[in-house]
Image 1 (cartoon, helix red, strand yellow):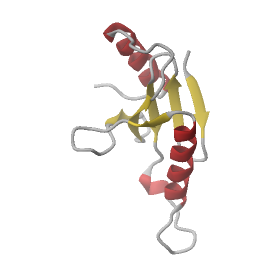
Image 2: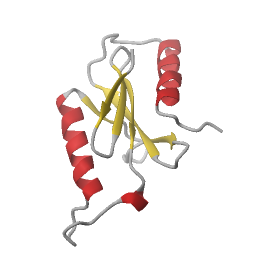
Image 3: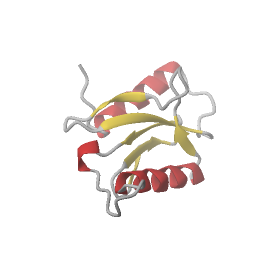
Length: 114
């Protein structure tokens, strides 16, 4: 069962069974710099979402270069990154379970597939 957590401008979709997850980021064009400084609303939202997800046992999935793994884009253009749960309910999900979980997550997150 997919769990969805709505933050101010980020949305996490998590599958605690397999440890697969996605984080839908906001559109960069919608960012606001309210104080004219270095911290924008989206940067503050990112920090809050990542702290909360970490507390819940989730963190961004790294790509081969050590950055966050970009999974795709929603129909309205928002980037989506991968998340993984440090302690999934199923300690070693099969490839089929992980693939099915990812398909469900992509559908819930409205990621456009080509």
